[in-house]
Image (tube, rainbow, N blue to C red; front, side, top):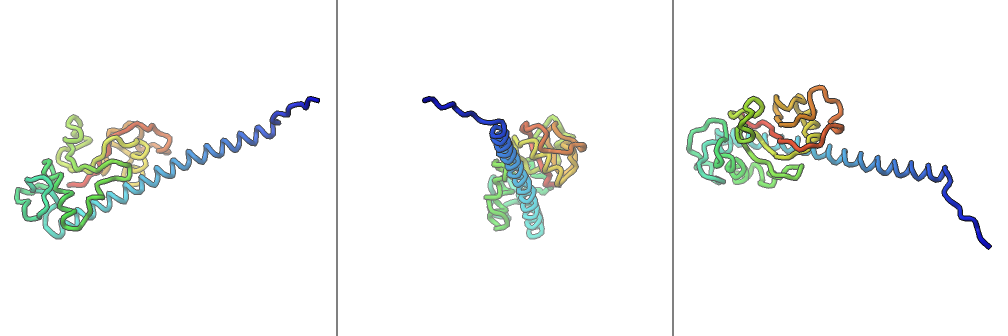
Length: 199
């Protein structure tokens, strides 16, 4: 005796599709929440590094690294060259971190940013020598390469003017502008991220 095989009814199939849709929707929303948390962490970390730099200035009368001629300088008294409020040499840029660490103002662990890369200290011309308007050579930036443009857009939205060519945050991203409403709907293409430190 053969029994007829029973298939899925349309109702059961519809319920299964709804459940799959909900799971996928929560997965993508969860990804946005994680990326949003990373953006907030980058914002907080910039505030911490900027505050540490100003604490150092209040205590020693110059910005960390300024006037240092040796890489990774540990002693404040060894930075005896002229101070120009621009960390333009490799020695000054590496000494920015080593001096903040050796004076117990900021640990070296803060060099690692929430996006997964290490912060670098660079002048505008070291970021892009061909675009002095966007990355002025006289400015010193906290820099990270290959950042998701959506995160940059969201960071701009929270901290700046949503214009990658002006303001506190500079970038070579072309996927957002001051009229962008939803940063998470823009392109994910990687871009340079530079947040101005000095002057």
